[in-house]
Image (cartoon, rainbow, N blue to C red):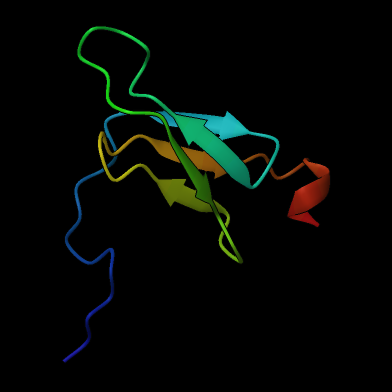
Length: 66
């Protein structure tokens, strides 16, 4: 049985293209936001916020992408 972490997952509600592998999310800074969290992509080219599911994707032209 394969347990791919993205198997059957819904697409993220929002994607943000970024130029660094370390990103910050606060849910949009509105009244319905969430606490500011910092995330690191590690070896991946994206990371999802655990609070709001916003997906941060590393720009393929960013220096950290190479």
